[in-house]
Image 1 (tube, rainbow, N blue to C red):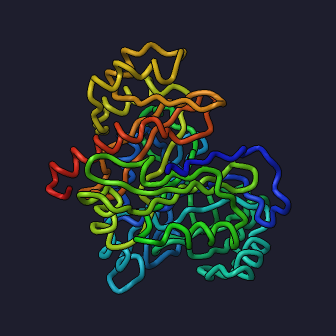
Image 2 (cartoon, rainbow, N blue to C red):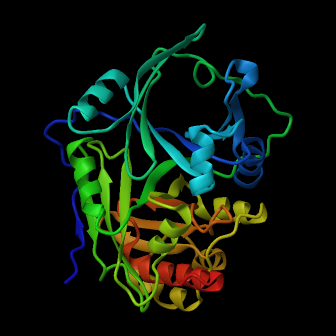
Length: 376
């Protein structure tokens, strides 16, 4: 029996001991940050923001910070072997290390989460320069992924102390990407509920949506998922776990190639998905292909929408509706040679859900890619 549940995300929580203001940045550990920054600027329309490296006093790594509207990525590369960043890349390939969360008080965030069982990653530290100070702290979450709490209310610099402004003569136009909508984590067998418990007890999140293997399944594979949200709904972390199927699921493929649990994809908001995805495709970003049969009946299921269907079909955009509106979404192919990290582009027209009606079409598209790689 299906166990899909949707909770009203606007209902108040009793005590929000970890008030979050949203995602501050997403940090990727990569093999070559300079080249990765160029790729994200070229393909996705990010702009140069800040740099840290030997020239700024950082001797063991370099970081390039890129931004588009309220979306900030940090790309970090080790300069030598035998350091944790190099070990992370050797094990996982390029991927997400830090999901940084904006807070008003990083010391309080650390105290409240660690006293509830959170494993310390970064004791509170103060970074300062002529532009003020930033306070950082952090805890571990699934796999080698961490949450860093960022308090920057007393800082007026370009990014944070230790970084300098990165000016570039190469500044491609933006593509309409706005902010992080949600970040999805893949965890191992029987680990979804422990991770849900972590977010509930350690971080004060709520489980607002659940899908079992009857909701998310095809002829060959299945998975289970629970969506965790903080009190104000600014931060959402769906958690995926494999489920039994005839063949290997996309989560199992991810876990095999990433060598453990980690962030599967980052969902990025846009106000015009047709314009954004059209531009991304022109710049070489590849997306999953959806069969024409999906569009023959989709409006019967979701009802009237503002957009013309033809451009959505041409791009491969999926459509779904809940009781608050509808959404448009599309998923890229993996951004790395390993079939791990990918991106979702999403435009919400009132809907607060995550596209349940698209699961079958999406997972069949993913399975076609798996089969082509010989991993199904």
